[in-house]
Image (tube, rainbow, N blue to C red):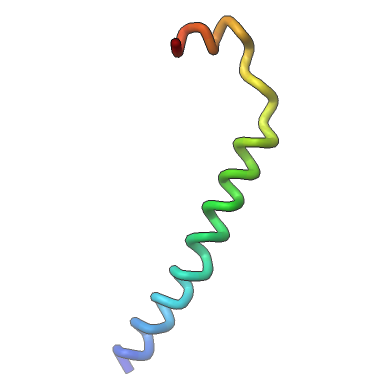
Length: 43
């Protein structure tokens, strides 16, 4: 039974990890561009 739970956990991880990564990427890309002055602080 423990083996089944482990495989289920791994399957969920494999499915949700790329999904989460893609969602984060979309979220960051859809964000409004930062103000020039705040971007300057980073350089």
